[in-house]
Length: 353
Image 1 (cartoon, helix red, strand yellow):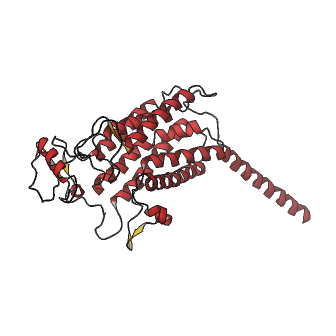
Image 2 (cartoon, one colour):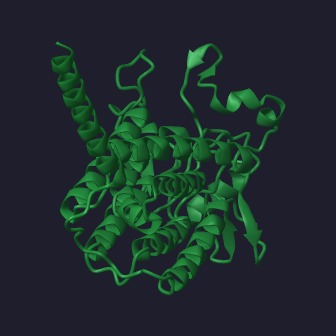
Image 3 (cartoon, helix red, strand yellow):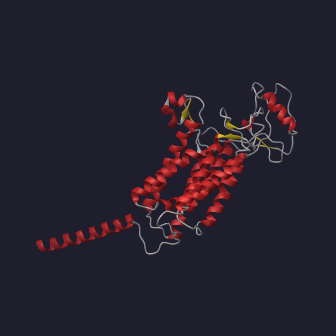
């Protein structure tokens, strides 16, 4: 076995063993907190005309829409059984066999759809420029997304393909049963890669790519650094939205070659038939579900950049000066009106005396 390391034995999904508090859920909370902090910083440095109340509301409904979109999309696209069609209330039911498990199974691409819907609806209701709102989200989300992938790593899920290289890690949930129909082929493929394999009939747990960490680095930190660099250099409003969609799509598309496809789904498109199990080989001409949706993101990102560059009033505003949000103005006007009414009542009381 070449240069592989075991998954840290001290790292467990539960924060405190025996209690229903998991690192995965905590990572999501941290992710939302980081995204909110970065967004708020952009609002302050640009003096963007939005009140604290509107900013909180925007994030609240954004998170709700993201979770709803991610959960529904996961049950529609990635669930191979028809359990949710028969029992749709289980989509948002956080218990299994009497135990609290949370919402297991979330789709990133579904979350993007839900988040975009929230931005468009909230911007329309509050009369904000959705391009500016979206650009600041694009510069906030990737760094928060990093913690989501770290949560996957702690759970020991969504790991990569078997590897004999120097990036292998043995995940507890990566065991392959001898009852698996691909057992013999996986054993043979591992041997070709120079990995020592146990005899037939013995459960195998071979080193795999820690693809969750690859995604946390490139789809999170690197993508955020690129977008953050362009936040004050964007040529037009909406530029960061397109950069985020296309950038994430490119990184995710190529990292999927290191990641094992979702169980039961395999490759949705195979231009050249491949007899090797997906745990061992991912041919360049085979494409997973994640790659298909990532390719669509790249196309949509490029199309949006083309459109956004030609929309009216698309000049970038670095710093908003001397402006106040509509909600803040209306709040101040309401306070002035109350003060005037109080003065009038006082005058009226004096006259009656």
